[in-house]
Image (tube, rainbow, N blue to C red; front, side, top):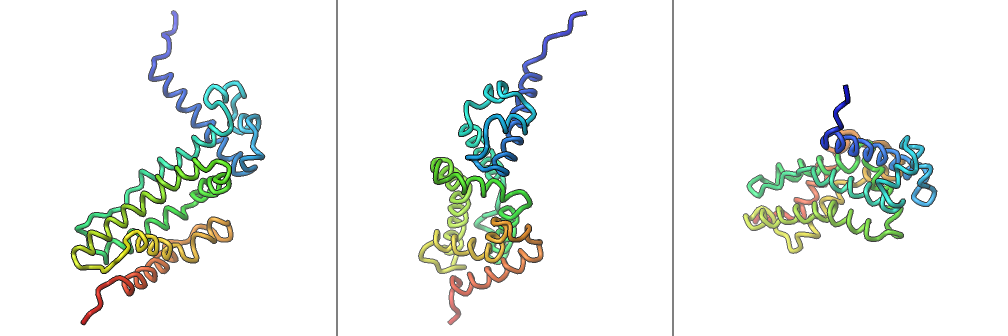
Length: 212
């Protein structure tokens, strides 16, 4: 009996699985050897595929690296922070700060950021794309929330973008740089809460209306 040919669904699934396999292998090689040290041959070996198969999916090393950056951008873009203007600043700010730092310093999460930082000077379009779609997008949404709450009288802010950046940077204090440079592991939820609560107090001291 002649076996039925594979359906298009099976072909798509197989191609998706193979592409995933290649990206996982490439990510490891880029992190271990850096962009310059990585070769298509080394990536093929790490992914468990032939160089011919590798070139079917990606034309060169730059294209492969771009796919990894795009994947990280999409993954972080799926993370939803609740900036409902109806929610109070007392609830939203500490909740957002904890979630934001938790994502930023998640185990394994620093790898993509380190890789993008390492290659941004040589491939500025990739660095810019990551910054615009991941970092600046979150800042813009948070700034819009702050503006909405200021309109309700909860806050007094002249520059919403600056205020958003200030809060997000304060939430990272003592945590992100130590993590990204591998001087410390991912911070515990308790440590994150301590830093974010301090950032929230400082933010409110600066931007809450002063009582008469």
